Length: 371
Image (cartoon, rainbow, N blue to C red):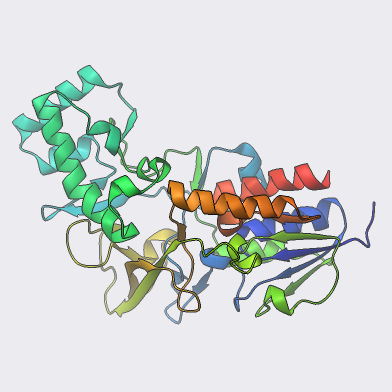
């Protein structure tokens, strides 16, 4: 076992931290992990403010997974509560649950109409199934077509346009499939076996991952400032930036959060409420709900979507469509020519990863490259 081999990890988010831990722990090799930011945990960074509230600096992060491998890995670094995420939306002035399900149906429609539509839905679709909204639009029954048009207009269309700055037909189906009609009374946003929030926050979880004697953490450090030689480099930054944008810049959406402190116990009845058709912001987050923090004040964040601009804001969501994926594939071909440089994470892979998928990717890359 080569304990002198040096590894550089670029990015101290969950992807970088996971692979840093595995290399240091299982191979006993030296790891240097760097990040341009002044803090750990990337966009899942959180902190306790002066009111004792755990603030998610870059928007709400809920951990959820069906993977035993991922769950067993993260549980080594933090205990989790049993929080199960629900999302409400303001639809026709009514706060109701989304994704649109049978409970939503009865909240927004008169009883008789809701009963009629429910009966037709159960004749056509299996109970507990999820139907992506763009597929759901293809109905020939008059009542189901009415429902499909209603859900598309009131929940999907305007929210998606605000969030992505594009019409839905310009966005990859993998993204639009995240907005289904759910034939169920299950109000949870995720149905995964394991769900929760780390009891001491995501930043502490990442800190615990990196708390090994052979891991050196350097914050406020740009990759281009590092002059040492390394045996392996794992890069979780944006792949186009690594190659100095030689083929052009990969498009992303960014998010701007406007934080407000209010002198009340709670601002809203739920951690997240979406505003598909009202206002310029997409949703309001209220952070006290996640860890049941006790404070006489509360902190909310209104979320505004915007295009990513270099040096102005953060990359959040890759804009997945045929043109952008073709550009990414050019960079991927360049990456294959490199020796001992590996890309991972949402920016490195240009993929819309949930946290558990990002960690699973890190575990699988470790097993592929290092074992």
